[in-house]
Image (cartoon, rainbow, N blue to C red; front, side, top):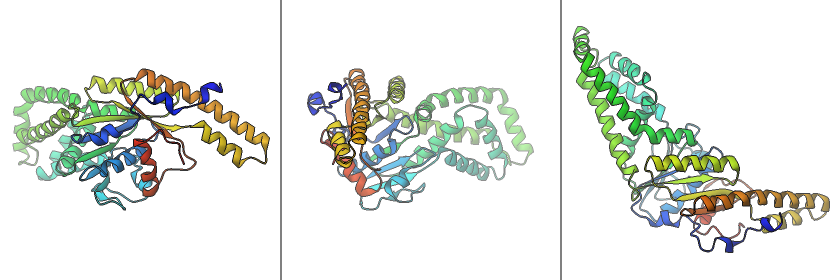
Length: 352
């Protein structure tokens, strides 16, 4: 096991083990960061946005995870409006929830209908079709984001399952509209008669369909950009463990199915044993028994990591695989994130 535990820079000298390719690709507009829960997606999103901010006119990082972590990472409170990150002149952050955007849409429908009829019918319609609520909520978010003048937008996404639903929204909406058009042909006349009976308090067929059609157009426009590798890419984040690697493979396969470009994998929490062992031995030099146990555990852990890192390089030989070191403390606050982000562009240097 000792021989397998040595993670040498020379092992990866023929690769481009960094995210420099993303920073250099100035046509990229949408950068998604995703993976299994707890693998460091938020830290990766923050660090990548910091690197992009040094190369772009202005950058926005958005959290679409209901359990927002961007505020904790930067040490600054963010809301649903773009807020300048302290210490930067061109990096902005916002935390949004698709369900909140959907509630706002319901309120707008109620106002448009002059009462509760529009909101009630719209709510019943969306709740009767699985996935449409999230899809239209996301459409509202994208409609808002598209009007903003940012040269690059980084999405800190929720864990894999939620992210895959997000990517399936365009096809979900297409199926939904097919159902709605079928209902329109069958019950359109009755719908308009009911609206007249209630003195216009209920929405007209054209009003409701117009709103839904506008939403579909937004989703279709965004979907075309998402499938354009010059404008969109997805950065997969994992740690060198079995479940995380399994989830990453599932994510890569789904992204391929949806024609979303992905060619970067970030592997967080990597042990570089030479430094870890030296640190253990130095801090516990007065207790050789504990120091020896610490060193053995470190070597064993790194041996396990090396097995999965080897698998990652074998599975994704055409990917840029970036190894990020496990540090002694948390990566929180602007200064800490700036320092840690340097490993994205020069990741083979040993951690300080």
